[in-house]
Length: 213
Image (cartoon, rainbow, N blue to C red; front, side):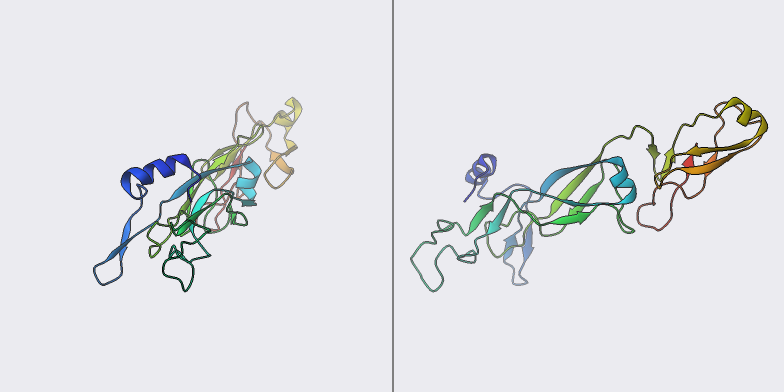
């Protein structure tokens, strides 16, 4: 049963959803693969920087569990399955309980990145095929204090005049909390200071970027 009118119209026109692919059984009979689903996930800057777990809710076509995609009741040849009206598939209003870690050693989260989760998309109308994938597009909200460039974080800090002339220390914010920053004597306006490994974890590694003040 299709509750999405666009998907229904597309299936009526083409006999399947565009964007699906096929895979072979090894005997020359290809099975259609279900369509990929793309959803947007909006997260705050700090969640992207430090990591967080988010639930993703979406609608997907799934194989009818009552008839296992056969379209008829188990053990019956002619009785149409009541649950799916013989289509072999049903539409889930919400696919809940799926959770993803938006930042870890293997992935990391940057604005605009796409995370692909295999076999979490639509089931094919040929029940023998594989489901498509779920593609999560991450959108990271801007932060009022931190600006990100790759793995590095940029922060502006106000330095008292006497500290800039004589040297000293100031408190500056980092993604891990406020820390002391030593200011050398004779510091100039707009001078940049690098705080090593105070940035964001680089995607796919355990390396952390720097914070530039």
